[in-house]
Length: 232
Image (cartoon, rainbow, N blue to C red; front, top):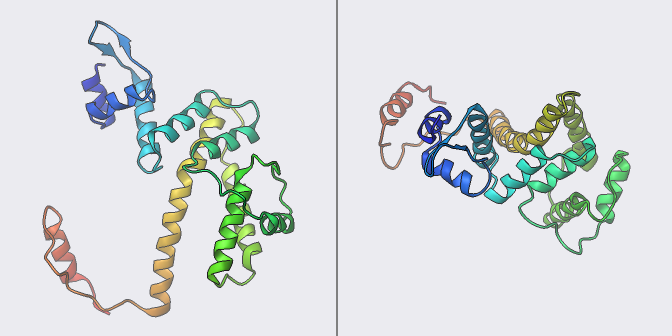
């Protein structure tokens, strides 16, 4: 297929596909002339993957390139694969000169076996987050930080159970993309759950008429919804 067909098949504009090619995210097609190239299903699949990483995954081009590098050339052992995936999606360096004592104490209480080297920036991230919570005086759930840790451990066990043992390529893809794409999904679910529980606790707030009527294709549907929605 030509690039126009690749665009139709993938649902991604030609300009965006050319951007993927320029950034080295998408492998080139087979040249049939000086200005024409042929693409195949592998390109369609790759475009869909890049789109997921840069869209729902909210990664920039450089981060996407690092994630794809892990998928294309994974480390030899599963632990390094996950570590490489987590490193690839970092958008900033870990906080410098953070006191790690509280983070290490929590990890110890949870009984977790982790990479305790200075290269594991997640320890500094945890320490930074703990200090922010402490400085703000936020009330934690009953059971505190340990309870959050237990929840996260259970989620990690369930998630890692989805990683196939073979073939290796499938395992790497699942581990890496699960690390990248499930995190925004979990955050969205958490926020929606907060909304749900808030309504359960405090009730549905009184409806407010919009300052201006909605415009565009969704206006009719929005108006119909406001007429038929039950009031509290």
